[in-house]
Amino acid sequence: MCGLCGVVYSDPKRPVDRDMLHHMTNMMSHRGPGGAGYFVDPGIGLGFRRLSIIDLETGDQPISNEDNSVTVECNGEIYNYKELRQDLEAADHRFRTHSDAEVLVHLYEDYGVRCVDFLRGMFGFAIWDSRHRRLMLARDRLGIKPLSYAIKPGALFFGSELKSILASGCIDRQVDAGAMKELFAVGFVQAPKTLLCSIRRPPPAHYLLHENEKITIQRYWDHSFPSRGEEGFQRSAQEWAETVRDKLEESVRLHLRSDVPLGCYLSSGIDSSAMAGLMSREISDPIHTFSAAFEDPLFNEIGPKRIFTDFSGYNLRHHITTCRTADFDLLPEMIWHREDPNISSEGIPHMLLARMAAQQVKVVLTGEGSDEPFLNLPLSVRQLIANIPFLRKKYSRSSRAFAAHATMDLSRYTQIIDNASHRSYDDLFSDHLSNIHSSFNDSEPHFFLPKDFEGRNRFAQLQYLDINVRLSDFITRTLDAASMAYGLEARVPFLDHEFVELCSQIPSDLKMRGLQEKHILRRALEGVLPAEILKRRKRGLSAPFWPWQGLLPEFVADALSESRLHTKGYFNPHSVRHMLQQHQNGKANFGRELIGVLNIQLWDDLFVQGCRPS
Image (cartoon, rainbow, N blue to C red; front, side, top):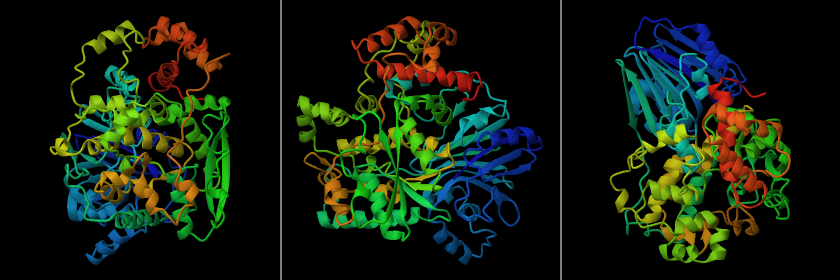
């Protein structure tokens, strides 16, 4: 896990400014406190910050092949690198290190851009092919690791973080009005957009090629689902449970490959408990587990319920941090690391958790990403739940999914993931932004759906959209930003692409049994987890929009002041003041809107004005 950046020029003789490259690289020092590495030739410059996890002695990057014709830098981990290395050595490739990244060099030598087909892992990497003067950028299949780029006349800048690209001093900072509208519509900015017009992100499972002054972007993987009536009923429920457990155990074993200590995030639910339980079967030393409690009892799941560490028979060392209202002061720092803010403040408990864990270990396994592979429910049940007020309130997000129309498109999906997506924010934005928004064609697709999409059952369609939209742009983006802020590597075994592919074939009625979600996963984990935990319903790590009553923190009051709102020009000061008054008086709940406005105001300070958090 590290940070990479660089620049490639169309002019092969154009020299790279080394001071600029160093500045870009050091902007990500938090991602790689172990040191920096560089590769510079005419027309190309690569910079790298390293967090040493595998091959502590010789695993520095960028790394090249024997004749230096292929050079690579990789942020992330290639979990099957040992198996790949064995095959490559059998084909007479010579290795100079024991790192996972070096397999990319030799895979590219043999297979070119199809090298990505062989990888199991999380990654954003850059490969420079000097013979063809080709730069290849690629993201992992599920978008676990971030990667951004900016195209300028005669140049392509790239980096693990947007701020690294800005540090080049060559990129303008015009705000993307469409991305900002999207942020309030669905709660986050969807790839390939960022909040800056000049910077874009390759979607998950895509690679970008810069060659002969041309740039092409290509998808290299997509997960498939059975068509209606073709689900895998050839296996019994018990056979499916055993298959799921075997594959998950394999994924965890691969994710435990490390030359430094590992730990595990732990909540009261099944997902993170599964990680701790499976880890305890593989590691003899005590496993450090890390949990976040909340000062607000409505959000505190580490409280009256027993969690995994409360049960005997497991060798665990538990650590707890408490998220308090005063920790809202971390919001500017969270935005600095996340870069594209979302309509949330849940990155704060993630940061507190990472800060605590980083004091004990360098790597943690997490239960993130388990929801998406197991999303499903029969139509009759979801319609029933959608019409029962009590259940609609208890399962708010699920009930929106249950009530979804038979035709599942991106517009319908955004209403499911965020019940505010149907609201109009015309009054919230300034006249200038509203005029720009009125010229947009909202019917334009954000990405193209696969040809067989209409032939899939409705929940397979919903699951596909969840994995391709919300997962990488919201879930893993927050996880990566919060963990790497403290030089901590967060791994997600549930998002091993082979495990995801397996889960896509599981029949719908085994994913959901009645109102019990993840039925087959619970059955697979029998004997691994206590029955009390197996019966619990999902409750993920979340945070309130934080109390807006009483005296606001100074930085909040300043950001939402009429003068600051007017100066920045994104929002209507009168509308914001009205929302704040209504919210503080208890007449309406505008927590979502207020945190969104605040996040944008702070984001402008950090990325448009060019300041850094104190």
